[in-house]
Amino acid sequence: MLSAQGSLDTKVRGLDLGADDYLVKPIHPRELAARVRSLIREKQKHDAIVDDYRHLATLSLTDPLTGAYNRRALDRLLKARLAESARYDIPISCLMFDIDHFKDVNDTHGHGIGDRVLKEIAVLPVFRQEDALIRYGGEEFLVILFHTNREGAHVFGERLRTEVAAKSFNYEDKRIHITLSAGIATHPEDRMIKDSETMLTLSDRRLYAAKRSGRNRVISRD
Amino acid sequence: MSDLPFNILLVDDDSATHTFVKRALSDAPCTVDMALNAAEARDRIHASAPQLLLLDIGLPGKGGLEFLQELKEEE
Image (cartoon, rainbow over all chains, first blue to last red; front, side, top):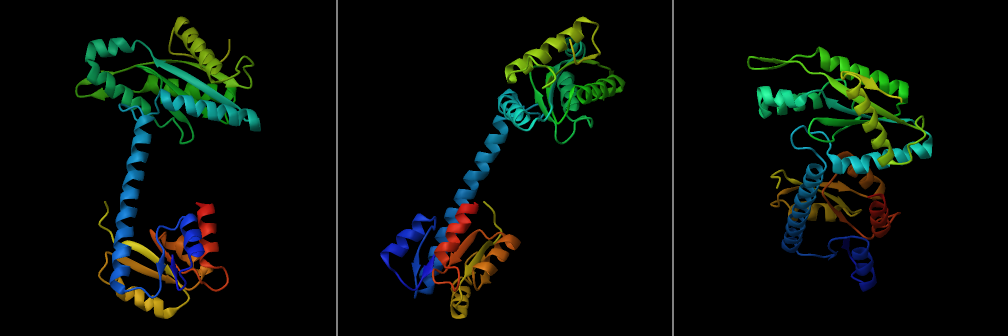
C-alpha cells in the first residue's frame, strides 16, 4: 500500500487486510526500488512453494505408472460425487474392470510389457474427459461415470470391452491380445448403495460375477 | 524461479507518482502498468494478472483499503 498519510490505524488496517507492506509518501526512490525487490523475492518464494505443493498434491493422488488417479483420490472423488449425486438427483455409476488373465501377460512377456499394457489401457480414447479413471489395484481399474445411469454405463462398459478385445498391443515383435471383465453399480438404481463403500462392494461383486461367468463381459445388474 | 520480468500494477490517481515509480523501478526486474482508480485497476488485473499491486490508499471514489478488501474477498 502507498499512502501520503502514515496514521497508525490506516497502516494496521491495510496490513490486516492482507497488504504485504505499507509505504508512506514521499519515499526515496532507492528505498522504493529496494522494497519492491524484496516483495518480488517474497512473491517468487511464495509462488515456488505453491507450485511445489500443487505438484506434490497431484503426485499424492496419482498412480505413477499409468497417470490415473490412485486409491487415495478415489476415496475423495467417489464420496464427493455420490454426495453431489444424492443432493441434485444425478445418476452416477461406478464401473470396475479387471484385465483377464493378466498374470499370463506378465509371466509370458515380462512385467515391463505388462506395465506398458496398463499404461495404454489408461489412455484409451473411450475414456471421456469428465470420467475419473482410478487404478484400483494391480490390473484392476475403476471408472466413475457421473451423469450416467445403468443403461448408459452398460453401453460405456461394452464400448470399453469391445475396444480392448479388438486392440492389438504391439511391442517390438510381440502382438498381445487381452480382454477385460467389468462390474457396474449405479446410484440410485441399485438401492443397496448407501455410500462409497457399498457402491464399491457392489461393483466388485458384479466384476467377479463377470469373471465367474466366462470373462470378457460386462455385468450391470444381479 | 522464473526469469521473466515481474508484472507490477501501480494504482494511483496522481500522474506524478506514476512517473516517479516508473523511474525508481527502471532498473528493477519488472514491468510497471498503471491505473488511475479501482475500476481501471480491476480491468488491468483481469487483463494482465499482475503479481504485485502498488495501491494508493487515497484513491478517488472507492478508496484503496476498500478495493483491497474486495480483492481479498474475491480471492
